[in-house]
Image (cartoon, rainbow, N blue to C red; front, top):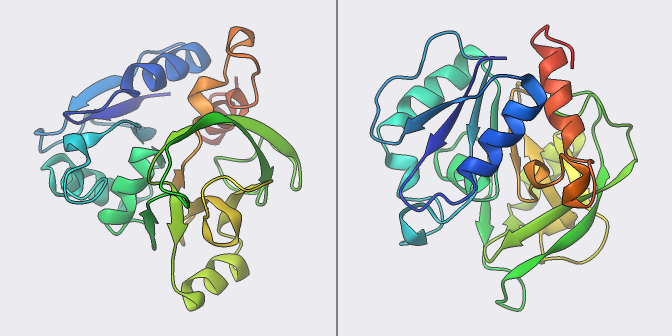
Length: 224
């Protein structure tokens, strides 16, 4: 699988994500600095990592969404290239309008950092094909602005179109309807607040996140 990880000033999960992709696919991803205006050719996946891009000034992800590389990411997504945004990457994708809604300050205005249980809502996407619908998995979270919000019409549309990929199994950050991850209308863009890349080896305390990356490998014709 040919993949790329986008790196912004303030990214701090880019190496974690790159290592997860290397472990699962057997190939290290390209690390693409945010000032680049072009992406490597032939990519099967673009990953936008967690962290605090631009120090979370203005709003989390707002400045990163205007980086030169995001024009290339948006164009690739529109052509159908899978794009995965994790934590701050999810925030960047909403700010870039690749996904609807916004990530607000957590309920209680507290940073949340712990393992959380998630329910798999949609097992039919390229990101969730290795999971069963209704299955409960555990991923870590580490965020201050993970409270997903959208207007009622948007939330109803996400629910009705099966675009809620993951939902928190319990109270975490105040997200509307417990939403932890959503898909775009075409199904090739996933924004996810919890960190699957931190659950790919037994040493991490579990391997529930590994199947997300294995499913992507299968989707691009390279079974894990």
